[in-house]
Image (tube, rainbow, N blue to C red; front, side, top):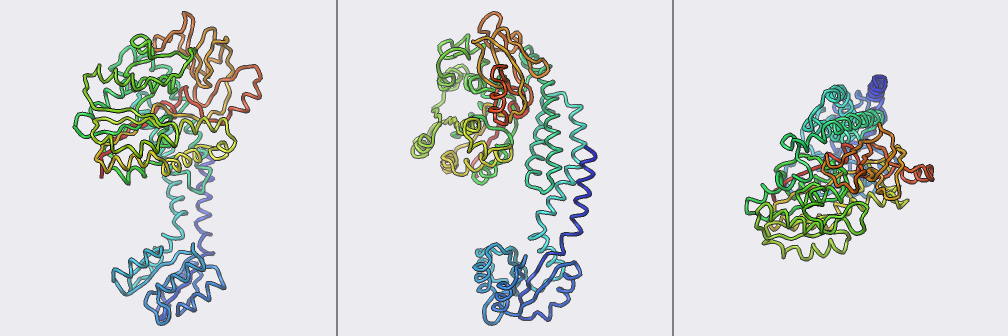
Length: 535
């Protein structure tokens, strides 16, 4: 790993001193002779500068040669700077143009900005201003790449040290948020070596996290006061306090939303709402909708749901929809908590349903609590398994995030959130569990009644690789239902997925590099909870 870091530093050093020689600058000014000191300054910095004394001369130069950037005087005889700018954009729409002017009149600035100038400088300009503008517009990505790489190199060893010492869920929350931060920072830089290092750190983090969960998860049910906020305590601990203010609240539960996906489209929400708090909490095991989301709405663990609401709960091996009673579970929890609210529940599983809620959302303006469960992200992850086109579009975590971001920006959910802001709603966004890109098969053998999920299994006489699973031989110890006397649960660790020996190779090939959930990983268990107020 040190070897990779060293190589990366050498690449940066080499790149830094070979980059400038290819940059071509066109400087347009009717008093260009007065700017010779500036031009010499740039040429000494290895920029190649071509000059023009009028707008028409500049356009001729652009037709002959490709430039990286144009410095354009606004006040020139003949074609004005603004007129020349319009012509330049017609010839080469993507070329950055820096407007330079003596005038500070607002309309000129507005016209220039409206024409998508790269920068705006007021005369007299000094050489360092010009250099800064060049670096800002042309060298921007390289400088960011170098700085980001350098910062991560420094952070790398700290994260590695933290990994060896972390021993509480609070510390795991901080570490995972840090890893996601660097993942988002590094995904757009030129140095792929850095990203590979981060991926190796994530793998190591998941390995250590699985050991932590294996050791501590059962203790949280023996002594609930030591447990973090989990699916079944989320409503009481985090949502209920937000309902005391008398302000209408929109609770959005986006099924199967990872923390990194949330951070990818959070800026879109931040344009509408002001964030008042953000934290992560722990999904229960299995990290599957039937268990985790029902736990949120019921405020109960699965074994308690089975006992208290036998009419609402269905076990894995029983026929019927497992998430069809969330509204009833929520009604029972609200009653148990003594909350007398005017509320409604909406589950969105299609574009048509989303648009219908958009159309009718104003009718909910007098409610204390409006709950929206949005299923698109979960549908997307399952589609990656089944559809080749989605496999291409979401081939890795970066593209998966991008796809989620694109969906959100064009979804009825965004329209619902916009309406909620206009109506003065408080906004809570959360999820039931995350998902992980599975890469390694783990052989498992069970009887015909064993559950089918790829990341967890429940049944009797399960045979498996010990080191690849977290096993709950006594499900009651982690508050899971016992289907029969000898049944147990197993959960896949890290990026493993369960595969039967029958038709093994085909099965592995089909499911490898798909997004699955139900097991033990940071991606599935450490999930977002954010609260917003209208801007």
